[in-house]
Image (cartoon, rainbow, N blue to C red; front, top):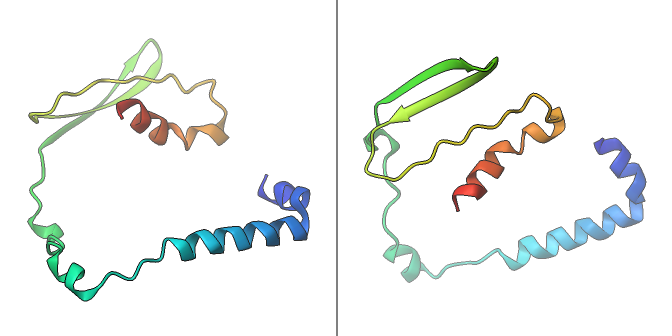
Amino acid sequence: DLHERREKFGKAELKKREKFVDKCVAANDVNLPKKVKEALPPIPDPQKVPTLPIEPKVTQVKGILVQQVQTTTKFVNAVIVFNLNDLPLRLKRYMVLFAECIGE
């Protein structure tokens, strides 16, 4: 798939896109003044972040394996179930992103 796209674009188009990406990266490269950096809160220590107790389980619903992870929080939550049996393998990697977008 990647090789086919590379061949489809050709070297000139790939070079053009590379320059565009480099320009975008450079535009987003911001050198914050020292005063601003010092005003930022410190990066928290991951070892001190409290963990929530979770209760994972896998069940079968109408012949479909369902993974459920439950935790007690004070946040509203939603349960979303997707039947991925007929979804092409190349699209399954986007399901996490899709699920996140639903919650936005």
